[in-house]
Image 1 (cartoon, rainbow, N blue to C red):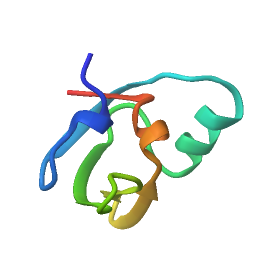
Image 2: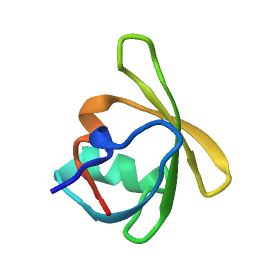
Image 3: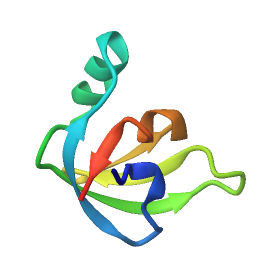
Length: 73
């Protein structure tokens, strides 16, 4: 299982599935990250957390722990 945490800078990936439950999963979905959406990994902070994504035409910063819950292809 490859997660968003494993993606490289400059890579565009597609979301296969969201793991996790409750309010964390709901928050990720509210940010626009749902099954089938394409994500472009723009930057990673110097210490690796957070990561910056381009999602549905806007920029989003996401914690690495949250990125681990997003299964990609």
